[in-house]
Image 1: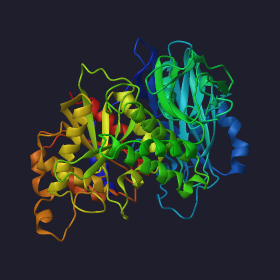
Image 2: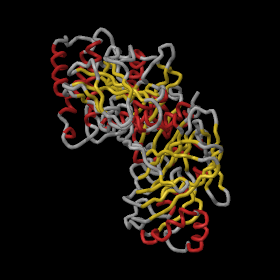
Image 3: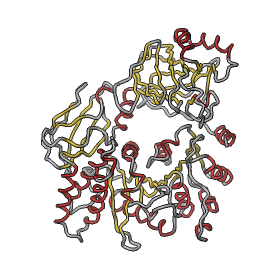
Length: 604
């Protein structure tokens, strides 16, 4: 399998996505050295991933105490001397180009992903690259790693901005030559390292997107009406940061609040107890949103229950309200409420806001204005048998109804136990739902994950396919959908279901993006075995497909989709491969991935 992935990777064309007032013109491998050249430009954003590194290690803590000053003073000279003694095991000195788009010291030192010897534990390894800039410029570097690390730029230690979730450091590049050095210490079991350079505009967007539905603590004290930031948003970059609060009619409660450095609490005038609102944060010119609740969640639930009692059961929005109340009650009584789940509190306010908005617009419906929440838990009545069917939908902050929006349909994977759709495992991780909201707003797409009568591990039967079309039809009733830009996305076993739908209706979808998809399955019934995707894959000859995978993932290994890749190559199906080491730990749990949205955005 390793050789198979290596072969397909050799056939890929490497592309660097460049955005920002700074531009990476090239990565130069000069005399075995990783060198990046940056020049000023008029592009909108900067986004440079540093993938190639000069690697030197590994050292024990005792060895490092004698060597570190020499390395920091002159990394090239030190590495040239160290090359004379590379016969020892687990030693490396020189340029390293990652095989699968992420530097991982296990890969560098030929340690198996499932290693139990912990041979690299507490070992020190240095990473170094040269950055050539044509001007003095302030940039920012984001680092993703589980290892302990200290970073140096031109011998100065980088200081992390005090923010949650993202490791961002100011990066003062001088004109000419810059040495970027990272000292890593292998801890835990993940020895990967990623580093990306941004300018002030792009890092503001990165940070703002990461704060979707995570701006303030969502339950606001009913006596003080003081809100508390979850993070030091205003300390990230030197751009204005403001807060604005809106009611369910889209009216602002007070003047826009300017967030001050190192100030975390703010009074909000005009709130009513036990009611929900939208909090909008703007960083620079980039805005994100979050529903919030003023008062106690249990009191809000009791209030909505009483309001529901006053509504006739045959009211057009009664079933919709009942379903959202079901999820709210489910969460209020869920054990994670008391088990230290920090994200639990953020699951409540989107529901109370949706109920608040629905009761305020009983004569209307969802999708009519921008005052609704970005995440919608939607119920509709199926035309097949009048049963209630459900889907979750993410929408951008603003919708121009004169323009039609692309729609991404996400097919959920198999589950082991029967759940009501609004209590299914795919919705258990609020950060993943937040990502769905963030990507919808970032790319301007509608994104839906429908129930479509898939409950356990069954095949996508004809009735489910018909229900999928009805779910899309329901979205069309409420939002301006561009059916010419309908996309299909799924991971793992959901990928098999997506392939079934796509091969049965090859003209329906503009493109498909699958994360580590299952390609082969056996069923007991004759119909399912006669309609396997592998038998009709030729139908996708005009449908662009992205397959994203992790070469060391054990949950969704490459063996699941190896034959799919080969069949696409044999059938001349337009295939894009995206292979990244250690990415499986994320795509196994997200509702929608950015690789997929980026791929879809390029399909014109």
